Amino acid sequence: MGLFTKKPQTPDYDAADCEAKKKRMREIFNETVENGNEYEILYCSMTSSKFEQGFFINTNTTSFFYYIAGYRQSDFSLVLVQIDSELKEHSEAIYIDMDKMVNVSYNPKYSQLCFQYQKGYGSYAELLNIKGSSRKTMYGPKNIYQPEEIEKFLDFAEAFRDKLAQKGCKLEKWKRQ
Image (tube, rainbow, N blue to C red; front, side, top):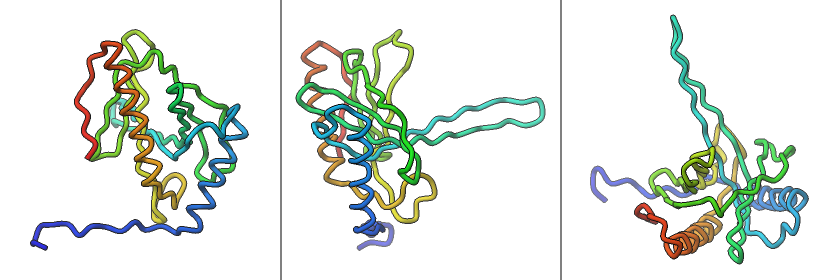
């Protein structure tokens, strides 16, 4: 190991708590989405930033949103259920309009998966942070370690990219690792 090489980090999480949270996420998803057991699920998050220039002070506000993402490979459907950090409250299901997607890209450096809508749709994209969380996470649910779920979700995204390529969509480069 050289002077500037990084030591691989082992994830800092509690395995029992992680399994309990995954079970709770499944319960939330199944009670919110019809036929919820047909979907694979994983935890993801989104951030939204807003910059306002003031007369004396400039402000930058960042909002954090936490979701359970459910996806089904058979018909390429994607559903998001917004959750709170304690996994006690949740929203109604948000069904993503996959017919309006024109691109899927992934940034492995930030673990961000982007589903981009066609022009004129009203929203640019769904930008999902899919890396999970450790026990030291300051915001959102803690102790969610999900490497297998992430790999399956990336497989789903790659298969959806193939479908978009067959439709003739111009896709950005895909870099998995």
